[in-house]
Image 1 (cartoon, rainbow, N blue to C red):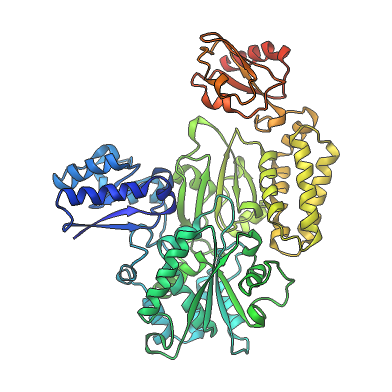
Image 2: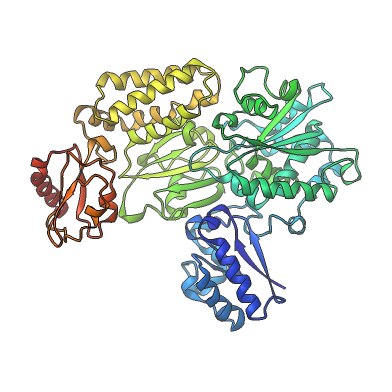
Length: 613
């Protein structure tokens, strides 16, 4: 039977994958093709902005719906004709079967962690085995001693992909040397950064690679029990992990005397309750043990005293998904990618103001420019790149003039940001950097566990200052206080959450201080983003009097008759933007600082002059 692969990653599911799958199964049944084609739902295929995807005879169809599926079944499956209007756009139309190699989004990628995503049914252990699954575990157990495994990982130079970048082999070695009969390994799948979905994609699309990596880690340090800590917001990942663990246990890859050896190991899933702080390793361990998710001081470190006081190794999903590949292919092959200090690849979630959003795996050392413009396709709607936010709430912004920096741990740290787990949010000229800092700090304030004063009180005070600035009520002293407070919180907080929370503020102050000063001195938002510092105005020359804006306005702030130019009364306007959202004639624009009704005419004149120039 020929396989038809349908992407069932999170983004494709959200885009209507279930309807596409059902339409495909129905069409195959109606055409009598059930015995000729096997429909396989895979994990994420990468380019989330163009789903749902379907692959037939290596031809990649994208942006599908049930109607498109029926056309493809009729033309492609029955008559052998490729339906071009649903193909991915390629530089060479003659090579339609090379979409995953030819398309710029994929051509610079190197698949190690994501090697099986889009290729296998994540619910089938047989699919995983057919692609070499559990061979690395077998090799480790039967051909290598625990120290040999550790040396292989040390030589590979693999660093933790959860954010800190600590050498994995070294961490395993520390734990292996501990004289304790009880040891644990933990997979940190509590991915909570806004805009990040790397771990989610791996868990949903290739859960066995994480299980195999965790088992090899357990063998290396002498652990018999492992936990996978998954956030409750990932129900599909939990479902597929549960199935995969059961399958692995039934096939002898988990349990007692694995593969006929003396090694025994089992895994349990722990579901987090949605606390971002539980991504921090000590808070995670507290949660696993049934306590409130709060961090504790280090040292001792988890490799010395972790779960229930015993040595514990904690690695994130992406880190563990690398392990089997390294054992199978050797550390020298792994080191062919990346840089000397940051070997291998990194999976990024590319999101924000970029044409091709999705899951990307590239060699470390690639530049942000390549990631955004070559792979991401650049900024849509003719806008200019303003900055790139990396590392989520713990990271910072990189301005457009520094995007030729290589992506590695040291280079990003020198710019004031971090790699983090791999979230990359692209910002364009319409984004206000003060508002960006406020957004991430609001998240951190909400997620602070409250245990230490610098984080609990300091981040809230920083947020209040930012809120004043974005409302046009800030002072120059506020900017100085904000910077000083950020440094204090960074140096005195208990855990990584508080220590890195000021990064978005510090980097925006470092690279975009002028925007802060404009907010304070001119009571103006140059990006026209901060609600209290803008007004919505109707251009009477462009308004057709369709009344769409008037109907949409929740406060009756818009006055006007049918087929006559309308007018927004500023005193009644709550600046929700509903009018601009429904206007089909680009007749509504924003101005900053805010204006009164009497100043509307001058604002329109200035707008038209600027537009013409």
